[in-house]
Amino acid sequence: MMAIAIGLSSWQKLGLEGQLAIATGRTIIQLLGVGYVLAFVFAWKNPIAVLAILMVMLSIAAIVARNRIGKKIPQVLPVVWGSILASSALTLGYTTLVIIQPPIWYEPQYLIPLAGIVLGNAMNGAAIAGERLVSTVNASRAEIETHLSLGATPQQAVAQYRRDAIKAGLIPTLNQMMVVGVVTLPGIITGQLLSGVDPLNAASYQILIMFMLAFTNLVTTLLVSQGLCSQFFNNNAQLK
Image (cartoon, rainbow, N blue to C red; front, side):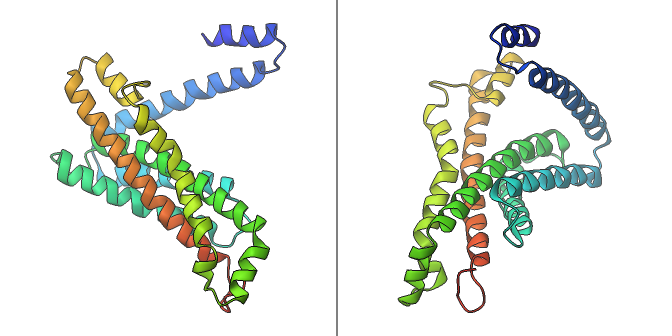
């Protein structure tokens, strides 16, 4: 399929042949590499190894979201990293310990795949909300300073921009929830169906995952937007 895609790009003179080839190679190498690593971790079942993988995934997600938001804001990486950590840990802790209840809390068969789904969506939510908030504040400096001069607190001056950013960060998740099972079948339920799992069980897992993503994205965008808002002002409540 990828060879045909590269051929079509060449035929239509799109100039995407190199990018498609590199993307194909990276997909094969990265996923096979992850497969070997996870096979080892699944067999070892060591909590330190599981937590190490989760920390690497978390850090990469935070760096990617930070790059989307912008590097000029001070402390943006710790804000994003901490926000994703808090929301993901809360979601995974509840899901693993209360709902799934594996034999051991760090069971890699459950914890790592669920963490990958949650972290990826938290990263996207943080990036969208953070980028929207930063760009809106930069474009509305005069309005914010007017609010401040009239006695508004920094949080009041940017409250509407923060709410808009949070809503923007949740749009992809809400759209997906609106059409799941009707227009699209996500990867989790599709993979389970292909492996022969009972359709009702597969649907139940997908429902759980959708609720996990909605909760994680909301908490992440709340924390990221709050953390970023605190970086926009100095100790004298002046816009930086």
